[in-house]
Figure 1 (cartoon, rainbow, N blue to C red):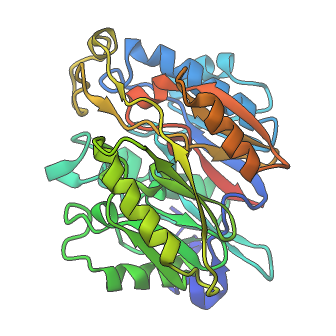
Figure 2 (spheres, rainbow, N blue to C red):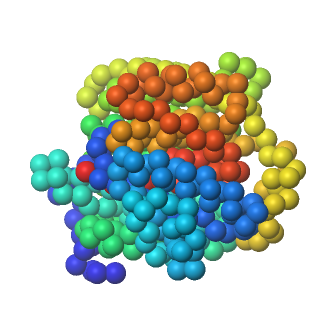
Length: 365
C-alpha cells in the first residue's frame, strides 16, 4: 500500500461526494467466481453468466475483471478482448461489497475511493464464510491499481448497503447497516455522520428491512434503487401473505412521505418481484461442502429485478424466466428511456446469494 495515497482528512472537507450510478462512468469493476463451496459445479455455470454480464457492460464502458493468477487464462477465454483482466487475490466475487466506493470532486473531476472495512456480512457470528482477509484487501489493491487516492473510515460497510442520488440523499436499511455484527454499538446518528463525512450525504432515509431471506441482512440494492434524482424503483408483491409484503409496504410508506436532501418529494414506483423462487435439489447438490454458508434445497432465494447495473448506454437486468419478467423490463425501460434494457438470465448468480448489481461496481467518469 502506498501510504501517500491515504488521506487522513474527510472527503466532505476535500470537496468529494458519491455520484449516483446513473451518472456517467469511466468503467466497471468485477471479480471472476471460483469457490466451489458457494458456486455449483466448480463455478462453471456462474462463470458463463458473469462473463455475459461483463461482455455486455464492456459495450458501454471499460470493464475490469479481477481474477486469481491461476484463473486469468480461463477468464480471458470467456471475456471480450475489450475487457481488462487484473490479477487479484480474494475470497469470493462480490465486487460491489468488497471493492472501493468511488467518490468525485464535482469541481475538479478527480476520483478518489472510500475503502470500507469488510467482515463477510457479519463477522464470526453472522458472516457467510469463515475467512475474509483477502476480500478485506481488495479495495486498497484496486484503488492503487487505478491510482486513486483513498480514505479509510474504519467502519464495516458494503457497497450494496447504500443507494445514493448523487445530490446528497442516501437510502439504507436498518437491519443491515445497524447490525451489531458489523459495527458494535453503531447508532443511526453516528452512521449518518459517516455518510455525511465520507459520501457527502445530507439526508439519510432509513428503511426497516430489506428483501426477505436476503443473507446480507437486507442490502438496499436488492430492495430499491434510485433511477434518477427524485425517482425510486421499489420491489413489491401484491400477496399480503408473502413475508415480503410488509417489508415493501413499510418501505413504500416511508419513501412516499420523506423528502430528499433538496427538500423534494420522491416519486416511488413499485415493481413486482419474481417468484417467489426456491433452490432446487440439483442446484444445492452441486455445491461442495466447505467454509461458506450452506446452500440448501427448498431455501427461498432473494430474487429481485432492481438488482440491475446501470451502464453508460444500457441497463443490465436480471431475469428469471418468470411470469413477471416482461412487465419488469417494460417498467425499467420507462425509467431509462435513453438506455437499452438488456435482460440476462441470472439464476446462477442468485444461487450464490446475490445478483447483477452485487457483482459489479461502477467507476465514475
